Image (cartoon, rainbow, N blue to C red; front, side):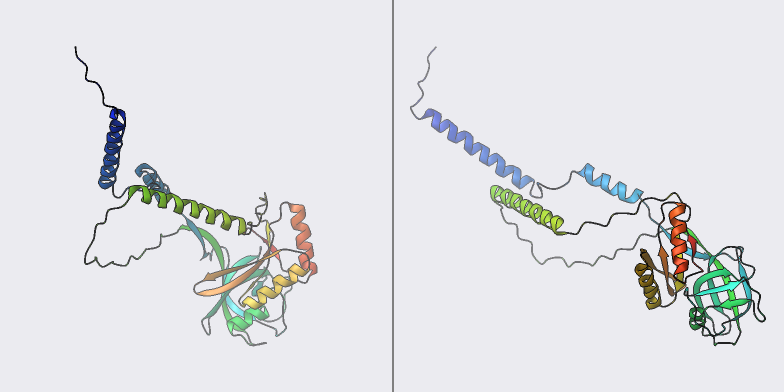
Length: 295
């Protein structure tokens, strides 16, 4: 058997040939996968994300009228004196404080407020009305008005997903295909990803840390409601008074039947002793009608 002698430059030429073949294969792969993205999620991962989003649902709370709990339609009276506690009415048949909707049947005005038990029976209408409630209902001092007072209850309902509107895009007149340098494209993508990571880290370092969540409470009603207000300024002033007294108030903006109102709460208390101490402090500040609520 005869063997042909390799030329002096044989190994070099073989290496060059292998490198050329490798480059051609890489370019061919890039052309076949022009839409390939180094940072694109796998199809399985994308499908898992969609499933998680569609499986999870949100619920929202809303107020509904509960006439079986409390409802009266009778004359109410504001005696003309200013009162604390925001919007409220008092009636001798009340057992526990309630959140109610108060309607003035003579002018169709209504407001959301609190309902308390009236301790003393005085001559005249049994419904006693606060100064803020009278203002919201258009009542005059010393003049009775026919009022409808109905208790409210919270219920949870499924939140409907928002409908996303997509704008139609005009098709381009002409699409031009241009060859990309695979090495330069990959390098640019890596550089862009590194820059994005740097910006994200810097933003995270500069962002303020979220406030610590309050400790969970074992109480069924860990909050104390100071009052319900139809004027935001009055609610904020009450919150300032609570803050100056050393408590941490929360002003909650809510809406019912197109009417906006603001609730001022203190809490949550972590135990019954803490809640009792808060209530005592609140009543000492003049808000004697404050009471316990769930949220």
